[in-house]
Amino acid sequence: MTKILAMIPSGEVYNHDCVRWYQYQNIQRSINHYHNIGDAFVYDSSLKLLQFDKLDVVEIREFKQEHIDRCNAEYDYVFLRGSNYIHGHMTWPEATEQVLRALKIPVIAFGIGAQAPVSGKLEMSEESKRIWKLFSEKCVTMGVRGDYTADVLWDIGVRNTRIVGCPTAFRQRDPNMQVTLPALDSVRNVGITMRREVSSAYAADVKKYLNRHRDFVKDMSRRFDTVLMMQGEVEEKKLLWGTEEQKAEAWQALKNHKWLKDWYFDAEIEELYKQRLWYSDVVKDYEDITRAKDLVLGYRLHGNLMALSSGTPSIYFSYDSRTAEFAKTFNIPCYDVYSDEEFELERYWDQSLFDRFNRTFRHRYRDMRAFLEENDLPHRMPAVEEPAAYRHAFDAMRAVA
Image (tube, rainbow, N blue to C red; front, side, top):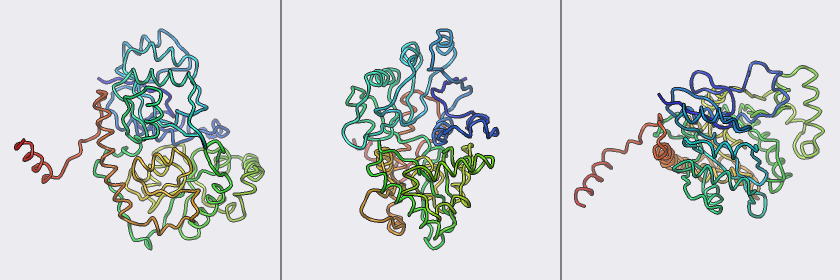
């Protein structure tokens, strides 16, 4: 019987390995709270890869010896839910280091990412350096998002990393998953993953970012039947689910925000907001809606990845080191938001671009499976079956050797 612990979960678990936000049916409970449902995608997807009989949570906000003793005595390992943890502003609860030192069972970092600043080198706090060195000592390998994250950890002396991308890519547990483009003139239903929130801490040009975002949304919505897919922003949740007073508050906040007022909201975007907004606090709803689309594209790393995991075509919009690293890790077709060229869908509607993704996905699937096995984690990822001709050729070479 395999018993596991999650560190920094994101949502409540039901039906063994499905995740939704806490008390999701109580809308008013969290309507004023921004929780990125993309974190729940990662948590849900991690659980779908792992083989376990019991799941619990290890608390890192405070140290209780009796809690740690029970974890060490009753559970097999802890996994840290993947996220963008490595950046210059990251802080950990004071008790985290004490908890990590006291845990005697393996602690597995699972899809960890680093965020580069707009300029200069990422400077990690001494606290963060200690934390990541402790994580590295607690496992055989750490699963990281891509080359940049591996390089950042290498620079502080953490060498036992394996590039795995993100668990969300592999949530279907299908090593043969492929994206095959339909004829562009057959595309009707399109999901746009939205990120109107932006920070000068990671966006090189906020004005260009918002102008491009606005024009892209309008262009796609003129051509296709679009859905604007949000990921937990407070104002959009209020527009969808709030009282009349809350809806009025949300519109006021959006229209009074200096950047949005000057560079994003116009009459056409406002009308699209009134007609096409979509959000859910249940991960399964995202999986279902992306499967039903002919195309999903835009600014959300995990929203786009949810589509690709089911074989729905998706194009990334790169605006920071995180999205650039991820697109590189999987060879996902990607548009640079800060480029001098306007986005043209036709330039990316090329099966050869997606064949690069299909090949890379297969390799990364192997990497994720190898990561789980080298850390002795029971899992549910089938092995990649090579074509018989490859196996026969390999056996022949081995016989000669």
